[in-house]
Length: 403
Ligand code: SF4
Image (cartoon, rainbow, N blue to C red; front, side, top):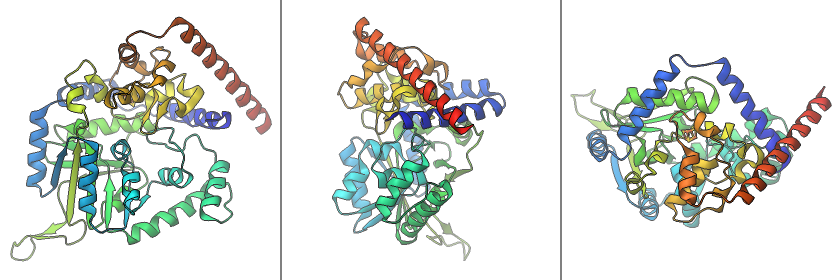
């Protein structure tokens, strides 16, 4: 990430922080305590997982409990059959299993429908925030990348950029028969799939003939109420709004029993829902001292407050695992110790701002086990202070220029 990108990232992060201050949710501490207790009781809870699967199946949803990444990819390929085009919405689990690349290798065209994700896809760029993936890119940079891809001149005007990307997405949405989404929660009591979004794209993707949901076993919640509590906290921390624009609760396929009480499926869409519940070492991790890493709800608030992330941006992370939590998690599930673990200053700003009070510095120290050497620590600290100083200078120069 270059200086301009870091400045754009910090500007966007600051605007979310300002919205959070102006718009605090009612009883936030109580909601947080409820969320923490829910996460503690749900993560690694095999009875709850089994109950959720049973209920989902009763609701007519086809469920695959999947151990490994490749198994998930093979099942999805089987479900897609001879399809050549698939539309999808944001899903960290699809990134975790490398789904897009795997489908493309088999000759399928995969189109992201979230505007930011589609921009990243056509520009072949890395995200910088779980819910605001192009936060670090200016309209100028985006316009340059899109002009090259679409082979037409595009102005660095956010409205024009969105209009062009939207037209591209809509044309694929019109043609595709299968849509892939992630899920924010799966509820055991109702057997429901809960998905939140602001753009309205999930609504379009899930209304294809077949809806494939790709998520992980740590997303199980006891009921809709606890899932909604999580969504309010997620939304507030991610964007500063107390609720996302849309919350989809899917508890079965489109059906009717209007004529002589005979059940007919697929009156509208979807007529088939397939849920992939990925384990990928989560059940093993839930038995270890690192279980709390799975409490994460993916709000990205830790990134907003991390001095290292605010200095080097998404270099402090990998594609689907950003910041200290992401790198710690990736090091554990991939069995590869990520060298970027050393970048963490263990300052604790993430823990102070995490709704589930995840002690990321303590976890990182444990994974590093040695603790960072004092030379590296002071070198990195000096680097961060220098980075902040440079960004401050640039920000002030930007303000002066603007005034
Ligand atoms: S670690 Fe905490 S703050 Fe960071 S994304 Fe997860 S829940 Fe949000």
